[in-house]
Image (cartoon, rainbow, N blue to C red; front, side, top):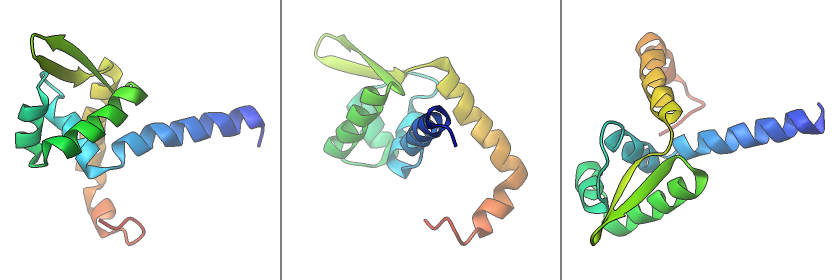
Length: 109
């Protein structure tokens, strides 16, 4: 395989690792339709603020999430409309193949 193809695959794998953690995925789902503060997200995903903040930092660094400051609050939202589209397409795919994914022994919880 050519180095350029390998680099592209490595980058794509890195992108999907952003979605591969349940906490990060739940954060993304939490802000899919509206921006929220860390407090709002923490309550919704039932995780501590420090844990959510750490994951948001990762998501921000990767460009999956963006933030804006308003007064003392920082609001988080999806970084690109294509990320929202990908999350919704994931739901569509799961509606077709959920049984296979659920019973797959290679991907454990």
